[in-house]
Length: 278
Length: 273
Image (cartoon, rainbow over all chains, first blue to last red; front, side, top):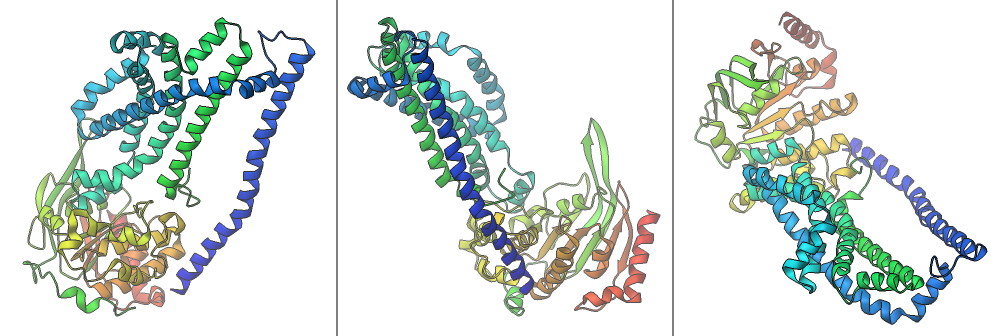
């Protein structure tokens, strides 16, 4: 008993000792990339001004900032539909992918027949499938959601199927000794085991879904960030094009951050400490 | 703490096979298919384990000790021969939770606390709702010496502490038989010695039958009533040695001539094989 207490005290000491170092490195982790980005923007500004690059070829960061300030109504009006398409596509694509992955672990024949189809679907270029989807579903909201869903579907399917399979064989033996049902094995073992894999996929899916929505808007739309990119390009309104890109990038980062934040709460055991974290 | 569930544990759930042997292994033969050819792992193994007995299975690595344990636990089925657990088939015994299994790795679920891990067998199949436990998960954590660590996550516990949690988990549905597959094999020598002491203490409190796989000769003499020495693959029973050292056993016994005689005899039996 005393011996156990000593082991514990030792472990706690180890955890405490690493804490200040972590905080220090977190500050550095924020500072270094911020400085890098600021440095890059400054260099860009210097090059554009110094070499007198025409505005319609490459605007300076300050000109882009100006557009972000003066035309933010236009940007917001077009960001909104794109965001909705992205979120809907993200939800639809991931839910279907997760359900199919669950089907994979529980039915061999289903896996053997659907997996090759999914891989084949993935090999078709999204820019080629998108017009087909627009032909089938029309120019409205639905086709955009479908394209965003399609682009998120595959990474999540593959990751989730791997995650559900990555169960420790001894843990499966334990479940067998406990006479657990398939549902219990899924609920107590496979599902929690797969969560880190799922969230890796979801983080990728955020940027992918936005890309899908933008591509869909290129094919046929009169609003959205994709439409704005095309319109700005044709009119040589290059600062607006750059500002649109900045908004799209900001959206993607926000979604990415949101998923990472949810992940922290959904998988708290991942940060607990040391050896199991990899 | 020592006296904890000793008396409560024997009384409930008296099984039909009471009084009879705990485990009967009858001419069991086991072969796996490997690269299209049969790989013979166990050959004509017969063994009778009495109730309450502590049996060590000793043999070289990869000889089939763990396979024998998995046959008793109904994780695997024998190619030929029969196994009886408390007078019934291993599958029946498994469904009645007559068997607790401790693996070489702790196999704890990292998202559950120590206490939740111990309680897992009670959640599965609604076991805890249909059966009054002899000891609660918290009491079992106390029994294995982890009082105060109920809410700790496995990652916060040392390897030895994790294995204690897994022993508590194996005991929670009050099994008659505890199957242990080299449970301390992955631990350092000091922790291993300490857990040997703890295991004997727990066994004297719980009084179940233990089948303990090991490849440590010292463990095989120190812990059990009898040692079953297995030959290399395909494993057959080389010799069964009665260990006549009295319980409770003390670490100092390891330096006695009698202890050394046993270790030498086991070493000789292993070399013969």
